[in-house]
Picture 1: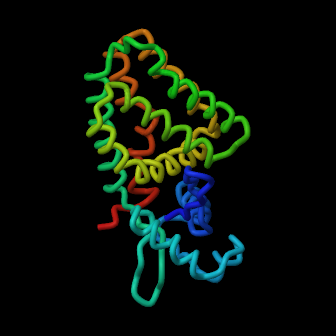
Picture 2: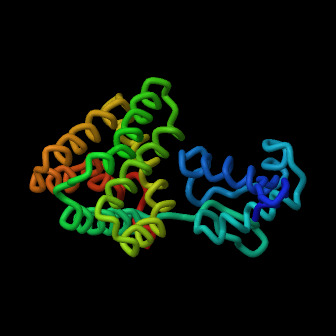
Picture 3: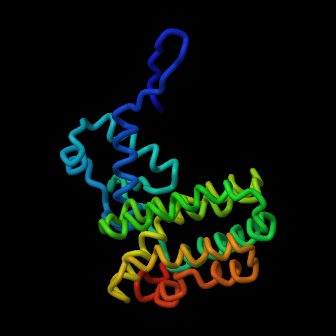
Length: 231
């Protein structure tokens, strides 16, 4: 939790040391720097982040609550393992939620509702140019959250938010896989630009097609080789 600093009658939330560690460690996990199932050695992390053990352990507990790390007896914390079936379930649920958002939210009558998608798209372009995987995953995540937010359906948004960290893990997988497979991480921007263009023109069928064929098909076809079934 964040500490509170009071200035006059207003309260300003001041990030704690644990908050800072949570943000940095979450980014490393989501970007794939720490792989699913990898042990998170406290001594190494303390040195990496320049913090003592108490805020580090608090950060690990927060990430455990968020579903990104797991505590094992006598082993400490590890990055949450993820199987091929997990990834298939996550992507199938995302498709169902985004399809619902398109059915409810198109056509988009207020163009300003598309601005968060445009902003995320530009961030994707910059991240690709700078070869910044962390920024690319975050921009991708914001783009899809903005898509789901189009109809203004609070429970739909909340459901998607609950899936978001797991989705970011999968997005990190997909980014690295597509770079290995096709030798180019920059295709993320044109794929999302095409999706946004279809939304702007109000072509619902084209949008649904784009979502169903949104660059993860190759990943899903090769999951068992890449990750294993985990059975």
